[in-house]
Figure (cartoon, rainbow, N blue to C red):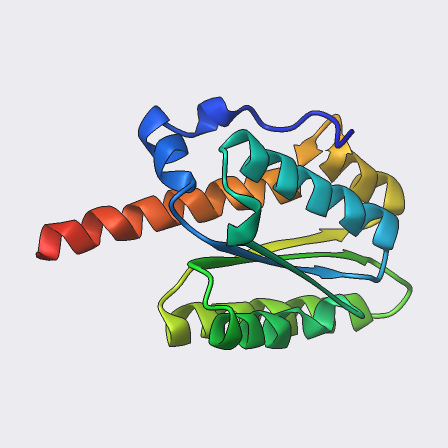
Length: 167
């Protein structure tokens, strides 16, 4: 069980109905796998609760969080999902390595958003400890995987509304 998932009440009934008409790519890091598995579980449970068919969900795993932007780009080029959710976990260490990785991922995800004109959601935890990661991956602070899917659905619905406005 992923824990305390955000309620689908964060989505309107219209957004929940539209959610099942879109396709979703999920790329998840294998680094800190216990945490990222919980994030993936939260994401998949939220999609399931929105009745998104399994054939509209593409899940890929990558070695670490640094590889998330490239995997998201490859997924957008090959499977062409409507949105991609990047899930990972970076735990602060004794050096600034975590800051460099987090900044590179953030920059990469933003570039892909703009290049493909599709939502690519940053669901990467940047925490000071594994305990903080556990709290954000199904613990008392919810599940960032689920929250990332909700963000993707909201962005896709916004894009759909704006596209209808233009036609």
